[in-house]
Length: 54
Image 1 (cartoon, rainbow, N blue to C red):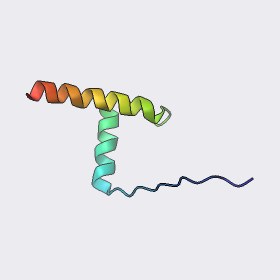
Image 2: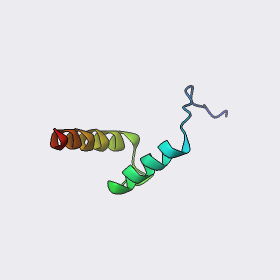
Image 3: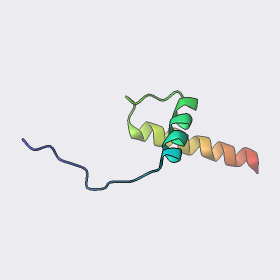
């Protein structure tokens, strides 16, 4: 059986990967969590940061 590969490939630089890793660590995320959990939490965190910055 052939493994299906993703149709979209995104290239990111090392600095962006390090930022993502740091943000994930701040929220105590694990690689075992689904991406939806991460997206929801980071969206909320950014909204809170913007609200406190205003």
